[in-house]
Amino acid sequence: MLTTLSRDRLTITREQDVVPCRNRVKEAAVRIGMGIVNQTKLITAASELIRNMLRYAGGGELLIEVVCKGRESGIRLTFTDQGPGIADIQLAMQDGYSTGKSLGLGLPGTKRLVNEFDLESILGQGTTITILKWKNG
Image 1 (cartoon, helix red, strand yellow):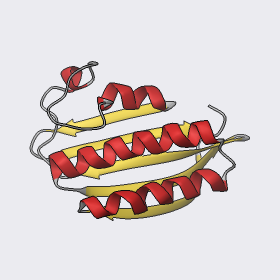
Image 2: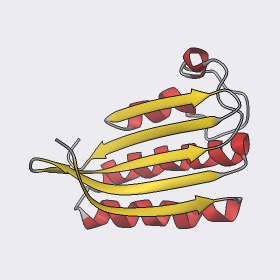
Image 3: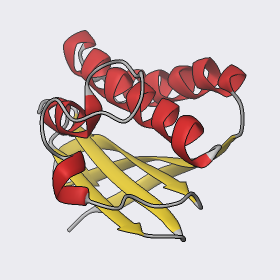
Image 4: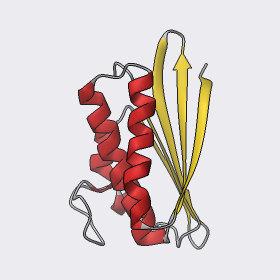
């Protein structure tokens, strides 16, 4: 069973919000003792998803949670927007698919950087993406 140890909610509305969001994710990762390689993977994934939220939905909200499962701890990030939604999730999850200029990772690259990746999207209502990176994962 997953237990949430702490929560931090951030609103993202402009490009200037990216760096503070990245810093908060890093602070949470450092707090649980996550190694630099896993920190880098988590922060890279977060950056891609924050930029996507700004580009395609005009912003949204990021929930940063420190979670644990038994003795293992990790960081769970939930990105929520009220944008147009993703018309074809299967296509969006294919390598090489892009509708804009981003870090070039796309959603499948982001998925490879983390241990868990969940995407829910409803056309005209928005998208929620939840990722989880374990401290030692």
